[in-house]
Image 1 (cartoon, one colour):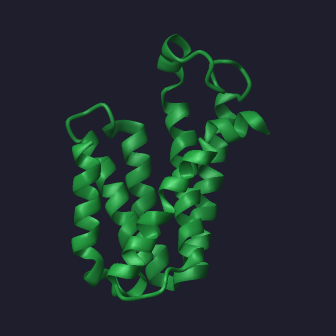
Image 2: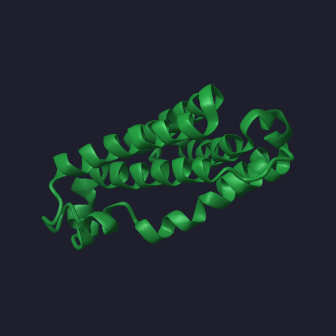
Length: 161
């Protein structure tokens, strides 16, 4: 269990519910805990997928990580990423209806695109910024348009760092 918590960088997920809360506030809504849960699940899926995608480099550069250390099999990490993505989509649909599912689907696509190909390209920073901006839009619910300035601000901050 500890290896899985390391794989998904469990404590780091505390950084993402703020995105959905910012989106809700920008849209004049109360934060939706279910959308925050969806956001965390998507974050965890991205962390597991990241380690799966980087397993060869991590074997050299970070051998203590769960996959290269042998504590988590690569197939298990990929399975965890897929299950967490599905759980995130389900949570978004339950908490945010069709709109929540749609935005979460875009977010899932952005996460997988980043981890599986874009992170080491010139598009990497913009791709990660899109993930965080979509997370803000996810939290906005039906008031997504009102949250666009906030989403752009969070995306610009992410792009900059």
